[in-house]
Image (tube, rainbow, N blue to C red):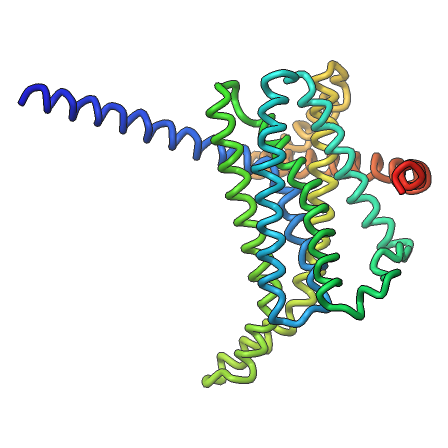
Length: 318
C-alpha cells in the first residue's frame, strides 16, 4: 500500500510540474503576444479588404481558408525557422526584427502617402479577366491574403521570439506555437465577426420583432463603414508606432543609443508635468515619437522600394 501512495505522490508531483510548465507557457505566450499588438490590428484591418466583392455566403468559407493558410505559415514554416534561428544564429534576431520594423514603417507610410496624395496603385485591377470568374477570383484573393499573412506572421513570430526569456528549445517551441495559434484565432475570429456584422445588422433591421432590435440593426449597418475606416486608421498608426519602436530599440541594442535616450528623456520630462497622469503622458510621448520616426523612415523607403527594389525584383523574377 505504501508503494501505491508513493506512486500517487510521484504522479501528483509530475502533474504539478506539468501544470506549472503550462502556466509558464501561457504566461510567456500572453506577454509575447502583447508585443505584437500593432501587427495584429493591421492584420485585422487588412484582411477584410480581400473579401470585397464576394457573395455573403462565401465570406466565412474564405476567412476559414485564409485562417488555415495562416496556421500553416506560422506552425509549419515560421516556427521551425524561428527555432533554428534561436539555436544557431541568435545574433540575427535583432537585425531581422529591425528589417521587419522597416517593413512596417514602409507599409504604414505608404498608406499615409496614398491617402494624402490620392495615389492609386492600381493593385486591384485584373489583367487576366479574373473578375469574370468568381472561383478564380476567390483563389487569387486567398493566395494574396495568405502571402500578406506570411509577412505579418513572420514579424509576429520574430517579435514573439525576441520577447521570450532565455530557455530551452521545447519551451520556446511551446510558447511560439501557443502565440501562433492564439493570435490566428484572435485575428481571424475578429475578421469573421467584422465581415458578418453588416449582414447580422441587416437581418436584425428587417426581421427583428422588437423596435429596439430593428433600431440596433440599422445602427450596426450605418456604423460599419465608419468602424472600418477607423480600424484602418488605427491599424496604420499601430504599424508606424510598432515599426518605429522596433527600429529605435534595435539601434539601442546595437550600440547606437542616443535616439532611444533622447526619446526617453523627453518622455520623462513631459511625464513630470503631472503626478496623476505622468505614466500616460510618458507613454503617449514615446508612442508619438516612435510613430513619427516610423513615418519618416517609411517616407524615405517608399520611393526606394517602389522605384528601385520592386522594378529590379520584377526583372529578376519574371
